[in-house]
Length: 141
Image (cartoon, rainbow, N blue to C red; front, top):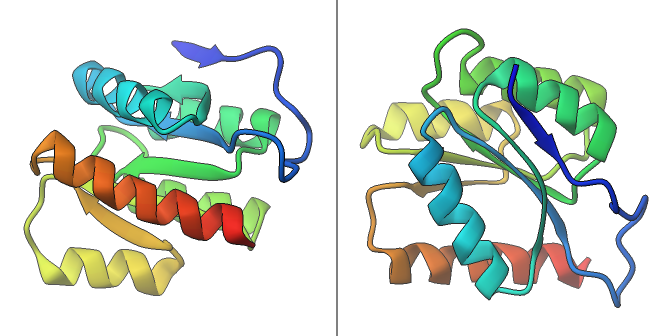
């Protein structure tokens, strides 16, 4: 199990704190890309996991402000991981990541409780814009 939690995580996000974000994706390159993008947006990546099982462990431990969760992963799927995260915390902010271009998939995730859906195959500038919008909504609450 390859879990990478960050040790100095605040328990609750205050208006002066960076939002704490957990990235869960089985593709290490996507984790690195998303982490880099989030750091440019002044976010704190509190941990990363390469599968749903690891993601659930970190979700419980870190209590992140936002989870970016891959839809297609071996073992526990992103959709099942989403459902389990929402069982733990029904108010969790989870945004699905995928390269799948299928409206039924995005609809299933939104109906299951995901806050949004981001395509991984878009240009980094477009992904940055989407992440910025999502983080602005998160920090406005």
